[in-house]
Image (tube, rainbow, N blue to C red; front, side, top):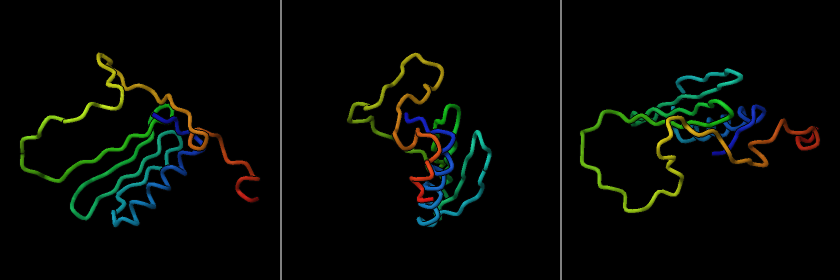
Length: 113
């Protein structure tokens, strides 16, 4: 999981917010909390989606489905590509550094100022 620095969290939420709006999602709530910002939206077919930033810059995407009929789901035909963290009770912290998303505030030279 990528560590999203405090200085980049607004950028990250902005990218997702613009994509969701462009996709026709209705934004229901925007939480501008400095430490734990979040955005919430609803799709035209009743799905609710959210993006929350948690501890150490960990991003949490969540999707809630509208009412559905229970159905059988086949077992996966492929092996998981991410670590399963068997036996762990806590969600692991972000451990991947991105030169962009994990970086501090953009420099004045980078922004053209």
